[in-house]
Amino acid sequence: MIRRTAWMMLLLLAATVFGLTAATLSGSTSLWFGLDPLGGEFDTLNLGFDVEYTLGEVALSTDGLLFLPGTWVWEGFSAVGRFGAYALTTSILCGPSTTDYLYAEAIVEMSIAGIDMSWYAAQLSDAVLGGPADGWALRIAGFIGSIDLIAISEFGARIEDDEFDGITIVHAATGEERHYTTDPLVPGKGFTGQKVTLLGVPFCCADIDANLYFTCDGFQKMSFDVTGIEVERLPWLSFDVDLTFELEEKDLMLVPRLSLGEVACVDVYAELDWDVAARALDGICVYGFEVSCVLGPVTVRDVVVLDLNHYAITTQAYGSTVERVVDAIADGHDIYPDYWEVFSMAYHGDGCCSGDLTFLFDVYFDEASTSLFDWAMTHVEATIPLAEAFAFTLAMEAIPAGIDALTFGFHVAW
Amino acid sequence: MRSKAKRFGSILLLVALSLILTACFGHWFTPPQTGKLIVGPPVRIATHYEVLISVADMPDGGVAGVQLGTVALPAIEFANVNAATIVAEGSSGFEITAQGYSAAPPVEGYLVAVYSGAPIVAGPILKLSFEATGVPTVTLNDSRIWLTNDVPAWIAGWSLETGAAYYTKGVSSR
Image (cartoon, rainbow over all chains, first blue to last red):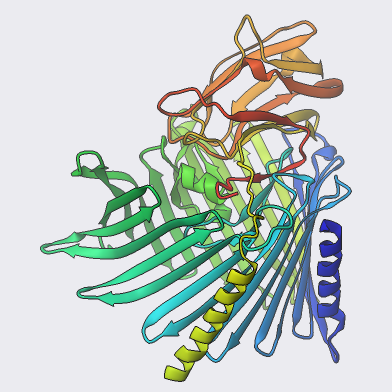
């Protein structure tokens, strides 16, 4: 069953590509190498490659990751195309260390007479702990007057929204992750659930969001949310109210929100100290702040975390912002759990040959460090265009013991 | 506007009818996903090897502490590993508070790690690094492993998973 559907998805992918006539071919290729100089040997090489090409109205891409020597993490393929009102996205993830594919997903979206319809289908291989599983879901959304109505019918799969995560597949040996929208549940089952959401239902002085969810096990829950209830004379304070009915339970949740407004170049990360049991506001906890300034093509930032037990600075790939650690881990964001401050300088300007010249210089500080000013790590990365369609990329990380990581690569557009 | 609403309503009605016709023929069955402590295979990085230990679908709010054995009852067993090169470090904010490894074969060890922040439902929590003397293996004895949440209370209902190349993470809805 799984193989049959995988073949169908492959055929779909092929039909998407080869069904086009008068196609034009263009694209780009990225190749990068990672070295671990502290390891001291050339066999620390990691190799990643991304290829994107456009064929008519279809954009195809493939990317892979190889840890040398010998650990090929996976190879991903995807195709995105649009045909009139229809948009098609297909993805397949293959794990070279197994004989089977890992995950396949197809999403078809169409818009007819103001109604958005989306079909999501996915399969998870038994080569992944948690599999095998397959299923599909149908999402229909549209407006009735000013009310936004979303209906999701689940046939063995759930799709990512405010309540449900998508699916994240992790390579157990390296911790590398891939995330997808459609989460298949169990193999070969029929209808499994129905969710109906109404957004912006006018009710007296507020707009209510309503949500009803039931599965084949029966009624699961119904909820009503009102957000941003303001408190007179306290413009920095607002409340969200969430009333949820479950089969044997009814919950009323009051969530206070803090809004300090915008101050030019300074962001204060703070939250209310809300004692749920006593329903009391005990105070305001400031857990970090950020100072930023844009000087032409140069952006200077300083981000500080004051509570490393619960918050951390994300890595450059995730914006170097402050996130709650549990949220970052749940969302698959990489963090630096030990660094309490990052000072960052970024340059983004025109390069010599119509490409963009970018340069990033980040310095991190760790309280436990015995180096000057608590210095713990420096991260440098740059993209240097060498020709109109050719760019060189470089990244380096240095710690007190020496250069910890060195990555360089090339990007070619064709 | 009215015709749009009518068309939308008709489509919804069709979907509802399809569900009624096909729904719930006793096929709905989702086996409960229990918590998993996942030991990844050794991966060679430069001249040494690394083993990631992760959790997924952890019940009771997630893991805030892990104890892999004791001095008297070590839970970690290494084969073809140079004991003097073993280094353990925490991931995702976990910090090692106690550890020890025997110097002579069979190389065994114990380890305690805690996270002072909020507990973790899914993600890597520990990384073991070592140099190998042959083809290395790392095995855990699940009868000597204790996991706690932030109450703190022992977490039950988890299983030790080894040999899985890939796993799904943080999918509490599965």
